[in-house]
Length: 84
Image (cartoon, rainbow, N blue to C red; front, side, top):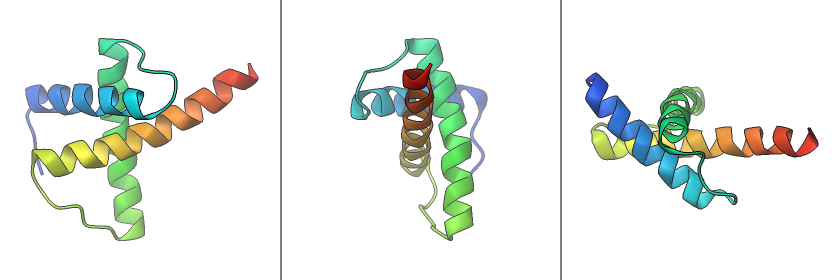
């Protein structure tokens, strides 16, 4: 589904915030949460396509997909930051 830039910012903010809440350690701040949410949307969409999972269309489906991708991204980022 094609969203406008404002919708992507809102989806990114919500997904990044949700991922920060769900993954131990909290978020990184508003701008970083938006970025993590948008990158998470790309990761989540790619993984859903790779696995053949159809989440559906609309804002809610985009938030779910982005949140799952952002959670994966946060887990990876935090795993590497602990080693450093």
